[in-house]
Image 1: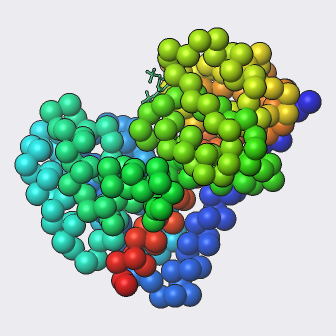
Image 2: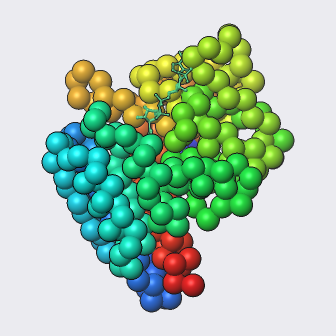
Amino acid sequence: MTAKIIDGKAISAAVKEQVRAEIERDKIKAGLAVVIVGDDPASRVYVNNKKKACELCGIQSFEYALPAETTEEQLLELVDTLNADNKVNGILVQLPLPKHLDEKKVIERISPIKDVDAFHETNVGKIMIGNYAFLPCTPAGCMELIHSTGVEVAGKECVVIGRSNIVGKPMAMLLLHENGTVTICHSKTRDLPEVCRRADILIAAVGKPNFVTADMVKPGAVVIDVGINRLENGKLCGDVKFDEVSEKAGFITPVPGGVGPMTIAMLMRNTVTAAKIQAK
Ligand code: NDP
């Protein structure tokens, strides 16, 4: 069997086009502030891609590139200013922050209605109870990719490898909201291959290149690879050993070109949602 490739680029382009058309049709004024502290090259790439997506969708973007030695007080002051600025509907602080800054404290300072990453405790709680305005971008993007396959989540065995607050846990919650039977795995899980082989839908969010091998995959499964790992040769690769798993799975996302572009598309959608909520 050869898996169908889930084309994250095409699906993300369609989401961005929906967002663009909605902004144009309803004459929505939406603005996204992106704050980057320091000069981490990967973060710089992400921020540039977010700016490009804003341009494409007709969202005004405001970039704040702060030096690595910015103090916590200065950063919190900027967040306060952006919270109070009517032109800014969404605030995104690019993570990771330099070590001397407390990420949790900074995220908690963002007004929950402008927290388009949905990392604020208020938004995390809302996702838990299924009453939310925004979904965290990466898990929401994964759900779009799963929907694109036509495979129903309801009743399926879903296995998520990884339990981080930004990917694994919310991913599991979204699958549960759609009535999947969800197992969350982590570094202490016993016999991981055996658990993974049960999955009709397998999500890898581990951060280890080629971690998921064909023997861990049920024939015909939907395999979503969240991992973004940079190899020594500079190439990007996911958490899934693509060559062998694509021979066994039913559907698979590539890296790059799978989950990555979806994350940005969902950020655009969240920014428009934020603008609409704030306009009310
Ligand atoms: P974290 O490092 O926060 O979490 C990794 C998770 O993997 C942990 O829960 C950890 O378990 C688990 N894990 C590690 N080793 C094993 C193992 N041997 N067996 C089972 N589980 C294991 O990473 P993130 O969730 O932040 O990110 C995961 C990946 O997704 C990264 O490659 C990251 O770059 C990528 N990413 C991609 C995005 C995109 O837009 N495509 C967005 C965000 C992240 P434990 O909790 O026990 O330590």
